[in-house]
Structures are given as structure tokens and as C-alpha cells.
Amino acid sequence: MARTIAKDHDLKRAHILRTAAVVFADQGFDRASMSLLARECGISKANIYHYYNGKMAILFDILDSYLKALRDRVIAVEITDENPEQTLQDIITEILLAYQGADHEHQVQISAMSALPHAQQEQLRGYQRALVRFVDTAIRANAPGVFAANAGKLRATTMSVFGMLNWYYMWNSGAGPQARDDYARLVCQMTLNGVKGL
Amino acid sequence: MARTIAKDHDLKRAHILRTAAVVFADQGFDRASMSLLARECGISKANIYHYYNGKMAILFDILDSYLKALRDRVIAVEITDENPEQTLQDIITEILLAYQGADHEHQVQISAMSALPHAQQEQLRGYQRALVRFVDTAIRANAPGVFAANAGKLRATTMSVFGMLNWYYMWNSGAGPQARDDYARLVCQMTLNGVKGL
DNA sequence: CCTACCGATCGGTAGG
DNA sequence: CCTACCGATCGGTAGG
Image (cartoon, rainbow over all chains, first blue to last red; front, side):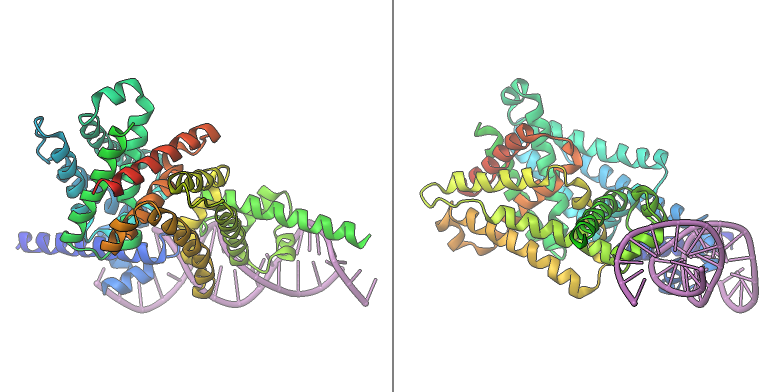
């Protein structure tokens, strides 16, 4: 009995979370009212407060669950020391595939993360940093000599990759696995040829 | 007499515009109140309405003047048919230099443009499209054979460049001309080697 | 799980 | 009769 209720509770909470990501992304966090969110969820506004303590708590849960899952999925990619090029491409592909279907969460991350308290922002940035470090290491493995001589170059190259990946939803948000795999190859190629060409 | 007053009017309007870009970027457009903007401008809230018809009129003016000037500055870059590589690098450098000191406007563009009416958004997107077309043409000139065989590749490459450039403020916003020139070389190199490497 | 309702603050405008 | 400008407050709505 209690389990049935608890299960329904989690399902409903997850539904609110997903709906909120869409509403916050479409309207913007500040102008998306709790009334609208309730309407979109098919429940009353007061009922939302049974699952979340406030509007910011929903925002934090969206980004915390999204970024944590993204990090865990990407750092699980197997690293083969014998083939650093393939490893980098595997990682980039995994990121682009993880982005698939998460455009709303991605947009909320970019537009609304700054609305959170500093401590919560710092926690979220921790997930982002772990991801950046992981990609950073994979890129460095492809040209250790170059980067040993120029530390700033590695950072610039890594941030270039994230620039390309994080901009992807702006021009190809509906892309499927094939298009994402293709783009991963292009990004990987630009990165490798770029850094080795110096 | 009338000219002196008019001149002061324009200067004051420009001051409101610049201050609003900073306030809107820091606080977010929706949560930045007109009261705060007035305080930051050192004038009364009512006085702002002498220069602008409303909050959205300020937002539109920020983005319209910024994007128009950006477009005009970049498409003024001289194109030399004999040296398409140098032309591409000149264009990328000009964009990064135009971004310098405009981080607030850039951030407002990304986070608040969607708050405007569709007609105004469309006008702003016109400036963006002109810029994209210009870069697109410059990239195509570097590998006509490759892109004739693969139209989607050109678009992906162009959007990669904008991803790298538009992400720059996220990790090196305070960069000076030297750092921007360095990064322009890296972006150009990644782009050229990437598309020619296929 | 809802209706009813609050303190506060919003963008915008009144009179002078 | 104009422009430029202010203190005070409007109607309406936000999160809770």
C-alpha cells in the first residue's frame, strides 16, 4: 500500500520535473509562472508544493539530476591508451548522444543556472568541471608534446570542443543518432588536426 | 540651444542603453527591475520612460544596435580572392575583437532575445543570418570541392565556428586583443585543417 | 489535492 | 506652451 503511493509519488515528481524543464526552457525561468507549470502538469499549483519546496528547488533538481547523469554517462566511456584518437571520438559521440532529447535541460542550464544560490551553482559547476577535465585529459593524450610546451593551448582547445558541442542544439536540435555521430567525427577531426597542425 | 538639449538627450539615452545591457546581463532581463535600472543610471524610473516607451523597447534597442554594428563591422572586412585562408582568419579575428567589451550585450542576446515579439526577433535574426552567410562563404572558398560534394558539411563547419566564437566569453571574457588574435588563429586552423582533412 | 487568499513587488503612469 | 524631470502610487500578478 505504502509502496504503491510512494511509487506514484516518484512518478508524479518526475513528471513535474520533466514538464518544468520544458516550461522553463520555453518561457524562461523567471516568466514561467508556477500557475502555468501547474496547468501544464494537469494539477493545481498548490499540489506542486507537495513535491517541491519552491520554484528554485525544481530548477535545482532539473540541473542536478541532468548534469549528474550526463557526467556519469560520459566518464563511463572506456579509455584505450593504445588509441587516443578513437577514445576522444568515443567521448565526443557519447556527449552528443547524451544531449539528445535533453535540449530543454541544456537550455535551462545555460539561461537559468545563475538564478540559483552560489552554493548550489558551485555543486553544479562541479559536475561540469569533472566533464571538462575528462575531455581535457583525452585531448592531451593526442598531442602531449604540443601541450607540454603551451599550457594555454590545451585549455583553448578543450573549450573549443565544448563550444562546438554546447552550440549544437542551436542549429540541429532535432538530430538523431546518425547525425550526432557524423558531427562527433567532424568535431574530433577539427580538434585533432587543429592541435597537431601547429 | 535646441541642439545642446538634443545632444544631451542622445548622450543620456546612450547611457541608459549601456547601463541596461549590464543590468540585464547580470540580473537577467525579467528579474532586473526598472527601479534597479533607474538606480544604476542615477535617475528616476519615470525619467527612463521619457527616453524609452517600455522595458522591451530598451531590450530591443540593445540588441538591434549591437547586432547591426557587429554585422556592419564584420562584413566590412576585405576579402582577397587570392588568399582565402587569410580572409577567413581576418574575419574570425574581427568577430572576436568586436566581441571584446560587449560581453554583456552578447549575454543579453543569448538569454533574453526570446522575450521580444516575433517580428522584432526576426529583424535581429536577419543580422545574425547575414553574419553567418558571410562566414559561410569565406569557409566555402577554402575547400570548394569538398563542400560541393557535401552541402551539410559546410553548414556544420560554419556552425562549429560560431559555436567556438560564441562560447569564448564563457571562459575568457576579459581577454585582450592579443589573446583574441591567438584564439582566432586556433579557430581558423581547426576549421581549415578540419575541412581539408576529409 | 483544491479554492481562496496573503504580503511584496512588478512595469508603467498619474498630477504638479 | 514646451521639455525635462520627480515623489507617489496605480492596476494587476508573482510566489507561496
